[in-house]
Image (cartoon, rainbow, N blue to C red; front, side, top):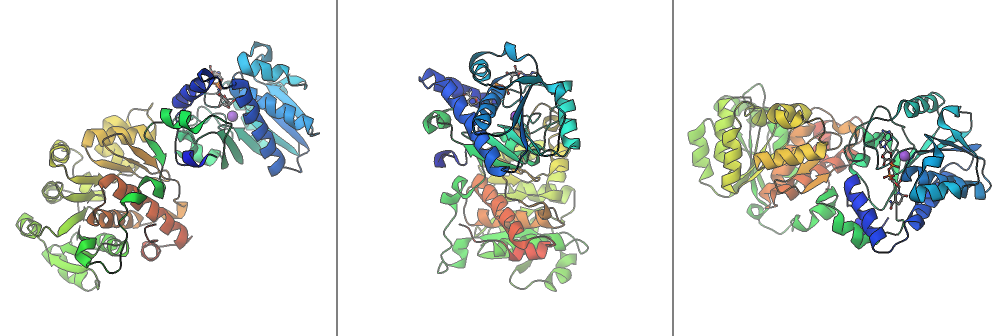
Length: 491
Ligand SMILES: NC(=O)C1=CN([C@@H]2O[C@H](COP(=O)(O)OP(=O)(O)OC[C@H]3O[C@@H](n4cnc5c(N)ncnc54)[C@H](O)[C@@H]3O)[C@@H](O)[C@H]2O)[C@@H](O)CC1
Ligand SMILES: [K+]
């Protein structure tokens, strides 16, 4: 993979534009196909040297063309190869027709494929060109291969995975390895597509990086490259106030733990000072559990107004365990011209009454971050959630535009989107992160970043990444407490 394209995500539509630009610039498109198919054959031999037979399944377009190239290369290398085609191979056009006519092997109809022990399937049925549910014939073949436990290597994408959304169109192969070209597509990262890809290899077939980056949009993989330049170097000599002062709001006496987790995570993630703002009746419960985190009585809006006169308290987390209702709405509206992470109950409080929050976010120039998981997203943005044709990325982008806030659409494939449309997709979170209190920890890390002066988008993306890394370090059997202890330093 080209280093400059390491974090770039390209939609299938953009990839088509890139292919066209490559052809227009005089690059031989058949040479690109040969390079793609040869890379697939090399991966097959590398991963399955013991295969008794490579079974190449070729579709009606250029993905199938890559398959014919791979089949020819494997046969040239002396491997046993069988080729099966979906549709009439004589109807192929352009480069795919050329690849088929250069392939010396007999082509059988797809339905004739019977899985055998020792088979390895090379899936070249559909790639970026998939626009609707797989034909029934392809779905039946997938079922047979899966019943036969045949390992599958996918060309570009496992057939059936939509490259734009990661959704499954009718059925899909579950590959052990996928070879894609030039750059990752959203479908490689978004669920459930991601788990159908197996390991992902991004192969450089020779399209100049400039042609790719000029046509790629504002979508990236979430890595330190997306926000590292905004991560304040945590100079141990710096004054604690220069590392920011984070305020976290506690719920009532029966629900104080969530906010304490956020506060502890905020401190661990580098905020200089953290104050837990507690209602009167929860002061005793909070006091008995806190050491480095400070405690302040904030019972109602008057207390909050007085506290907000201290401009050094420069970022807030509101929501974990706070309780749903008017108090949460009043507090959030007072805070959203500062830097605010609105999480959990904080967001839910605005379900039926979101206009004022979004207007404030638009006019205040503040830094508002909202962190919905799927259920919260559907409640806060029902009209966007109902748009079945949109991908998770497109939904997060639409929600950020509508709310004028940075939206962190959580899940195994968390998407962070800014009102400008800029977005990243995260891929470093282990499944074990889905544990009680994990979201509270994430909100606290975000709050720490905001307190340290990071812009909202970068603060949120960096927090999602550090949270994922913490999850990896904490390993299986983690609890939210051990997760806090495993938060890595900002790179
Ligand atoms: N153009 C290029 O520069 C390169 C393209 N490459 C390959 O080309 C692929 C894209 O090729 P195509 O655009 O031909 O698309 P595909 O080969 O993915 O699909 C073929 C055609 O099938 C039709 N189709 C879509 N969904 C269908 C469905 N459910 N049932 C029946 N027919 C359906 C569409 O008309 C589509 O164009 C990539 O995935 C990649 O593997 C590689 O050869 C590398 C170079
Ligand atoms: K494929």
